[in-house]
Length: 228
Image 1 (cartoon, helix red, strand yellow):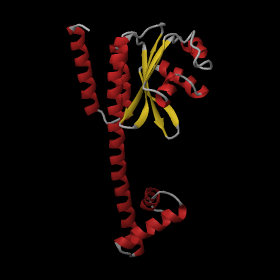
Image 2 (image 1 turned 90 degrees about the vertical axis):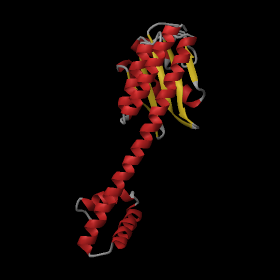
Image 3 (image 1 turned 120 degrees about the vertical axis):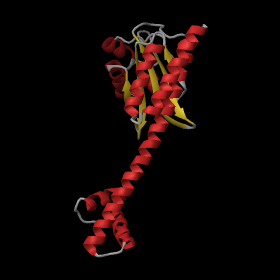
Image 4 (image 1 turned 60 degrees about the horizontal axis):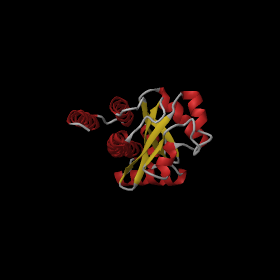
């Protein structure tokens, strides 16, 4: 890389870092990263981020509709570079899906339905927690070179940071909302039943166990006029 290219990349990654600090919404952040990947990585026509949610994988951020179309095929046939990157290795690349033999149910169908010929997928992880994959797509065969892999790896690291940060933020906000709901529900029970705060919380806890639902769900029901 010459000095001018390195400066452009440094500025781009600085922009990504600022976006991560400014955005709290996971979808908006990952969509921004996908758009920047297309603008920055040579050969990349489309980009998307797949995330693990429970036992499933879904596309959370994409530069346009093409990544979602390609990923839908992967998820349906349960094979492809994105899924291999998540489950088996950090980087998976295919030079030409038209001649690819590793994923017979995915490759030919993807070429026919989307026009995508080559792909590169990077596993997204924080410490030992795999969160998904950054996927790069091209209309051309042999679209990605060593420089593309290096730059893509940096984008993948930023995407992983974004996902980990957004998840932590969501957990904190969810905990605060749960605390507020439980507080409201205790207040309702104290006024309605004439019980102490400790007794009101015990009523909520017992109802949660009896109904086999989360304490927050019981609190929300009581806060809106229901019974524990």
